Length: 521
Ligand code: ATP
Ligand code: MG
Image (tube, rainbow, N blue to C red; front, side, top):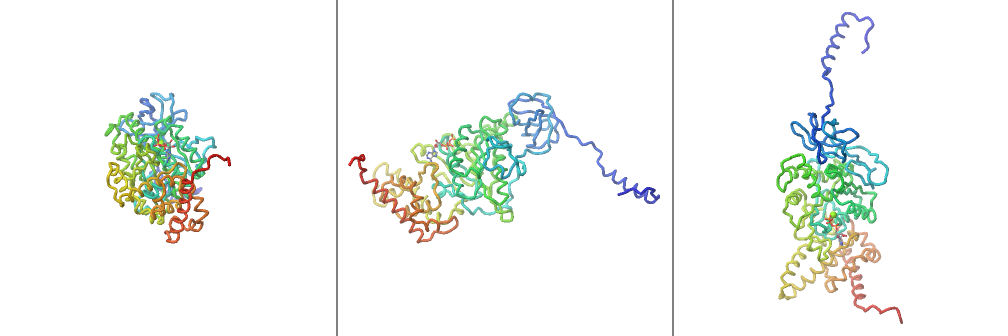
């Protein structure tokens, strides 16, 4: 509004009136940015007073570019988890709030990279130029924003895909004792995504640096690392970073989900994350509950895993599948953290140390494992040939126990045992030997038709590495007829079984004929 040079008395009044209103609306209270002070500091946790407006998970600044986040809010002070180790913070150090919860850069520029939970590169690459930054804690999609889980995540591991099929958007826990192949199973699932369009995020929490390096190297060598992101907070990092890692991983993976893509997140592992949470909570003097974990550990993991899911078509139809890993102690599934995680997730794949020791690898306990969602999402062709597998196998395991003590030699039982031994051999799968959908369908169809029953069990191990190329050469059109959403045609099935039979017979025959000794005539 331009001011008239010589205001008439009438205009002057209106102008005055306007000005009065403007002044009345103007907030004259001084705008302050509160600066708190460190009251005490120990073990990477600072108690800070004088920040009355601080929010949970708010990023706080200390001098010298040091940062931390608010973990617990009490009436008189805030407990702040420091994100870097150091000795320059002491009682009296000023702390400023940012009014912002902690954020992580997300976007396609992270693909192929190894980053820490704040998005800082840990590989030799250039700094990350993020498309945007998002809070590490974000609300999970509401029920109405979700769709049914209807497509399979092919892990390439026969026992998982056939018996405990995982759907896109599902949360499936991988749980077992130390060194039972948990990481291997998850890493193999990521590797198999070289055959799909799924983006994978591997989050390492509290792992030994060598184990993390091994996992990353395996994915780089065998998988499609350009479609993977590695978020690493190894055991040597500050507990605050380890605590943040899975949340940051989810935010990074959600970027792809929200763009309508499919993403897969592996968290290795949530037992270590729970231990970090317990450590931080005890240091902030939260009262300990069961097994000394603070009462909110269930809520921490539930709200994290709730972020996985399949979005409705209106929201782009993207999905985020979560494979959290948990470690058990002496197979004790009823400990606090395992029971929590089992009740949060949509199923669990239980790895058993005795099976692992008896060379049944992957050491999946078929009786204790379950997938509560993915069965409906299984590829129809695979479902057509795997229907009876679990029942046959469980019956065999029981029969085997009985027959071990002698007796029971009727032919039906013998037949069940012969079949069961072949199922067991079929479910053994070395690492980095993922099977395509068509390989899985062909093997299970041949099994159901009794192709392997007359052959020695050892034939199956020899068959697997040669199967893919054999099918490609001798049953080319049957191979291309098997698609993730297509059904299994009878003629296709017959051709696949015939091809497997030809290869199996060939292997059995060559095993029987004595190898010529030496190459002398
Ligand atoms: P940790 O508790 O230390 O994290 P983990 O349960 O993640 O262990 P892995 O590190 O994945 O177990 O595997 C332990 C060992 O078992 C590794 O040496 C791995 O190579 C081997 N292993 C895992 N799966 C298989 C398999 N299918 N076939 C053969 N060896 C396997
Ligand atoms: Mg591991």
